[in-house]
Amino acid sequence: MSELVKDISIIEEPEETLSMNPRKFILWLFIVSIIMLFAAMTSAYLVRRAEGNWLEYSIPPVFSYSSVVLVLSSLTIHWAYLAAKKDNFGSLKIAITVTFALGIAFLYMQFQGWVALVDQKVFFVGNPAGSFMYIFTGLHGFHLISGLIVLVFALVAAFRLKIHAKSLNQLEIAATYWHFLDVLWLYLFFFLVYFH
Picture 1 (cartoon, rainbow, N blue to C red):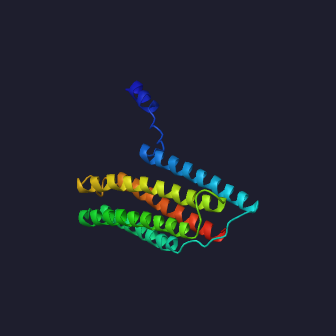
Picture 2: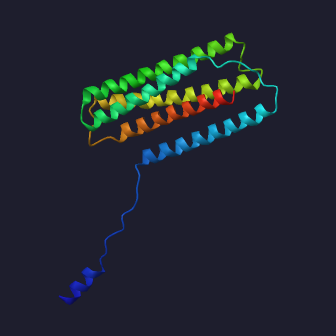
Picture 3: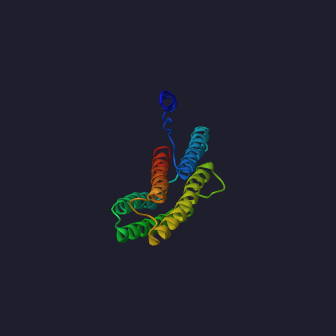
């Protein structure tokens, strides 16, 4: 009996490890890489602007309106998350669909912003002021398209009832990425307005 007690006392509880869903970890690595990319680009923008020979032009108002649309889309993706937590599948599907539609509207408005830039004779090739504007908005638009693809997968999962109160990972990933893209755009927009 005493040997049995000795054996039992040797067994220790394993330490609890901190773990993260692998997809969420990959998402955060991706977000950090995007932050580094845009930080480098905004730094290059400031350095090049300080050198002079900088084209002055007005930022098209449609970029302001598109910012409002993107903020609204953050609200709707949060609505989707709240609906999923309550297993409100109808609201979940509507909220993701509205978020997707607002994302498409944002991209269309960005394109209209480019049209307005061309009307002002601001082109991608030529003065670096225009080049930076197209690069910033274009790269953000590219990442937003990737966000729309993530939303489509979440919407399909919602229709298959794979997103619910006990299975939120896919929606959390979509919402996190979408909120990040919204914050990134607001940063870029205010950066361009302030340092224009």
